[in-house]
Length: 214
Image (cartoon, rainbow, N blue to C red; front, side, top):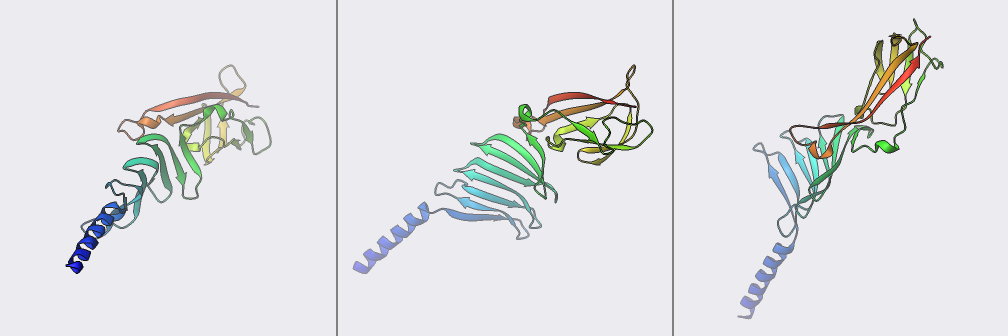
């Protein structure tokens, strides 16, 4: 009887322990590859980082949960070069960023436009003007992630040679002027709309810079 009582107590304790212990679980594709894995807390809710894989075993994304809610970073590996970061707090998307494989920031929303200086430029020739008939390279400051920025040159023949630089091959002055025009639009997607089917963009700053042509 004593041995039976000890056995019953052991079973009860073991069962109670199993219900209060977090568990690491995984789901699988039909080919046996892991589809997702992560930790569930004692209430059966996702808790901690979950990693998701494609059917070939490559990491597709990772999401951080806290008691079943998105809390922390969601990373999505859209390609070999880009990693999308989504920052959540209590299931609400607060920001998203795009980094390249070298951890360089390519895109950000929301963008703190008030603390970003106005655009400046210089030519590799050392001139502060474009000399008509010559090829020169114009470079702007790199304070804005380049995917947030749209730069164009009305009346010019240009070729992009870098994230913040353009080779100017020809440039016509604006009507009744001796200046060429460079236009810089800084945009971002509205964070709350980013993961919906219809993404809404917002123009944060529109700059027009007149560049002397001689």
